[in-house]
Amino acid sequence: MPELPEVEVVRRGLAEHAVGRVIDSVAVTHPRAVRRHIAGGVDLAGRLTGLKIEDAQRRGKYLWLTFDEPDTALVVHLGMSGQMLVQPAGAPVEKHAHIRAALGDGSELRFVDQRTFGGWALADLVEVDGTVVPDSVAHIARDPLDPRFDREAVVAKIRAKNTEIKRVLLDQTVVSGIGNIYADEALWRAGLHGTRVAADLTRPVVRTLLDSVTAVMNEALAVGGTSFDALYVNVNGESGYFSRSLAAYGRVDEPCDRCGTLLIREQFMNRSSFSCPKCQRKPRRR
Image 1 (cartoon, rainbow, N blue to C red):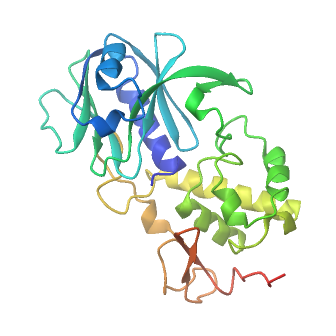
Image 2 (image 1 turned 30 degrees about the vertical axis):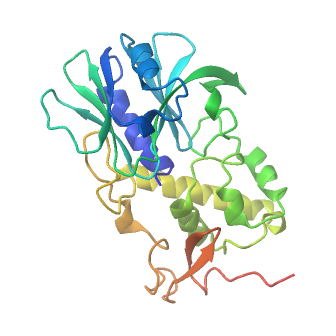
Image 3 (image 1 turned 30 degrees about the horizontal axis):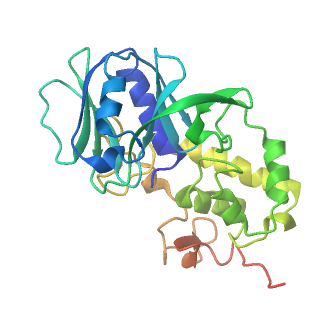
């Protein structure tokens, strides 16, 4: 699933190519694409028509558009394969384009989703900790790229968890935006095994880990995110290239860039975790 860098790439594309446009009409062609909007596709289309897109915003892996109508947001769930494409007038329609919004400049904003796990839903905006977010995102913590991210508060929150550090990194209520790929990459950089208990880590170690998260995400952003196939693309349909720079994730039986030991794959929370058995030693059992 897309993580913070991939969602931020999409957000930036929407900010450049969709913000400022008026939605002339909306066509929903697959009910699953609006299943999170309880009132249904007709209601969503009717409420969006005529609105001007004011901004594209994000927290962690959550993306939304705001409009000239106060207190209303369109939350976009990308799921495993969702794409937000801005296409010129007359461009061929993608096979899995389940929502199409005609914009006032003649282009179309399309939600394309091969696996149909994603979708659109309207939500009310609420203020949480001094920031306005959709009510469905109110429980999500700030991410490391948020200007108001409080590293020391997050360090304390992490150290209060008596569970595996990778599980804590994936908990979007502690720190958002981190998924399986960037958790493995940050843990490798910090020299930590994902099963280390968070409460056992010192403050300097947790700070180093959070700095590693921030660094790897910024590096991924610089090259458009991580793409392993044609499913993740930006609004212009272009893939990211950070997969070429991964140090741990997906590199089973390849040499560690730091020590040369062959990387391994282990199961964790029904996911695959990749690590170096020498640089990231497993903790001793208590």
